[in-house]
Image 1 (spheres, rainbow, N blue to C red):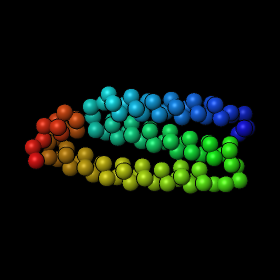
Image 2 (image 1 turned 180 degrees about the vertical axis):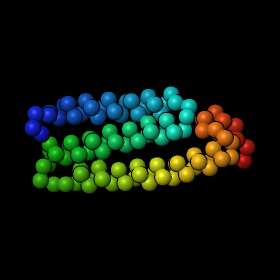
Image 3 (image 1 turned 135 degrees about the vertical axis):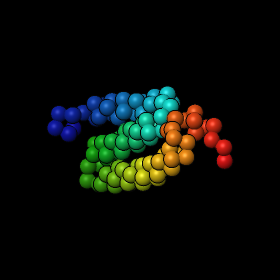
Image 4 (image 1 turned 45 degrees about the vertical axis):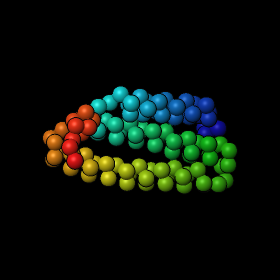
Length: 105
């Protein structure tokens, strides 16, 4: 136990974060909102990795390394996605998913 916080509480927060991300990813129409929801999904997974590692194998840092790797992948994903979104905005003056769908190549 991490000083008064049980694994069930950490997993509950992680599940809530994950499903908020899923809901936002499936219901939003703005590309920026979808990107934020995807980051919530990745942060929930990183939280799971760190918490499970802390409770099951407190001597090893494998879960923490996976969490840092997930954070690095999320940062790279955000950088590429923002570049694509800025380019789309310059092209069609909108970041709405339905407007991007109508884009002719």
